[in-house]
Image (tube, rainbow, N blue to C red; front, side):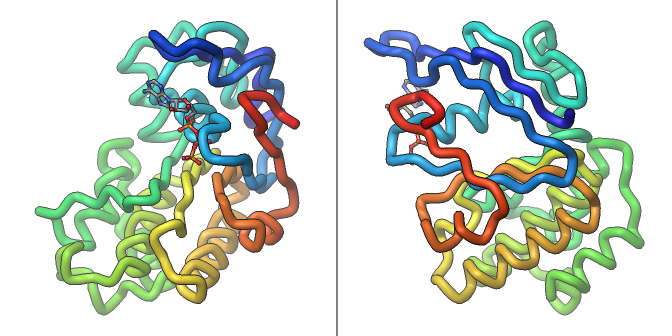
Length: 216
Ligand SMILES: Nc1ncnc2c1ncn2[C@@H]1O[C@H](COP(=O)(O)OP(=O)(O)OP(=O)(O)O)[C@@H](O)[C@H]1O
């Protein structure tokens, strides 16, 4: 199993109640899942735990069989460099780097930089004519396509996307999600995408709905 969660619980310090309770979830390689739920239901928190950006209080999270609980910060960072790729709503590109250098960034950190892979991704994502530009010179849709290329370049086994099209208009969101799905499918990775949009959730084969910190 690519991803396996059992009885995962999380309470933020000073919070009156747990934000996640008894979460169990399996995701197989190649599976794509939409994570929905109302604002504050714990979607981003769950994604952060899976990506090793934060720690669960109890329960187990395994990525490709590796339990995240005993990993130190370096171990978690290594997981995000190579195995788990994260795409954010705000793109999070590095403003001082060109598009080409942004695309290469993650794979370089992972020691897996492959210029041919970068070129192929740039071509597929319609970025080939923008490689020498800087992020601020691109539209939102173009910036998110750069972020997708950066995340997919090292061939992560699991892609986590937190409202990846939340800052884009409907038509741009549709085309960016199509590209993301196609490219993830080609690598056989798993995908978990947080979305508020019924329309976008319906495009993924599987949906998990969070309600008040539990899977409904
Ligand atoms: N770092 C934090 N410290 C304390 N409380 C937090 C923290 N991050 C989130 N929370 C709280 O945890 C709950 C769940 O937040 P989370 O961001 O996971 O929800 P969400 O479902 O992703 O919401 P949204 O759809 O609005 O992004 C909320 O009540 C939020 O206020």
